Length: 280
Image (tube, rainbow, N blue to C red; front, side, top):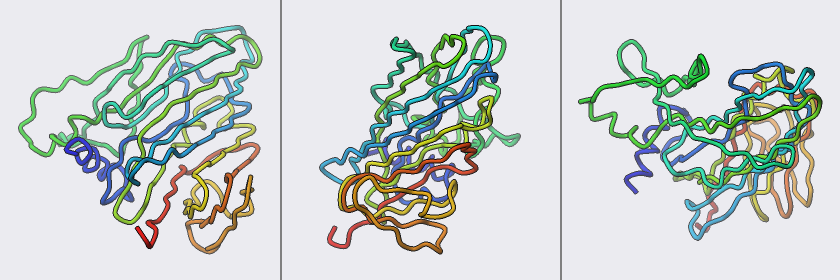
């Protein structure tokens, strides 16, 4: 539990709405580290919740299907998946490109600090890949006890070399990571969507999000990348409520929630939670 609470206190500084809970990891898009000429024609993001024996044991299986378009000659591009996580909470990270499994490496980078030496957790790491290599900060020992909470937290870059042939390239990306809970929610889930804007087409031409959170679930999804429930469809039976709030409420009896949009230029992230049931 010490490691869980260390992760929690660290993430309190990162996300203003991650309070009174343990947050282990966040999902993210694949991004190009050293190339911006390739565009994302299509993405299907599927998120399956894997319930545990207790509500705080929730895990998520993330499956992403990409169709990338390379307008020029074939090339090798270093592609990175960024995550802020406590060590060991992302598992089974796999990438298959055009039918071939790719090897990946993980670089654990330290968070930047401001001029006063304080961690800048809310500021994403940038400029960490220069001149063909990752740039790491070198820090000496620290006497401040508050930094104890960051010892298992780092800015992880899962990176791999992707050979893009001319034209359409397919990447399938899967992993499992531990979820989060707090004293008001059964589970919460967060996924960074805006990183998709770093590709050449400044977004995704055809985007589909499929949420499989289980049957008999009440979900609240922040309206950060959509405006109304009418933009969602139900693969099963569900109903929407609370339309005027900044959070969209869904009651899923059975099946999935599906969001689909063409020319998707996300200006917010996916954040959802399921409130604690009254009889829990």
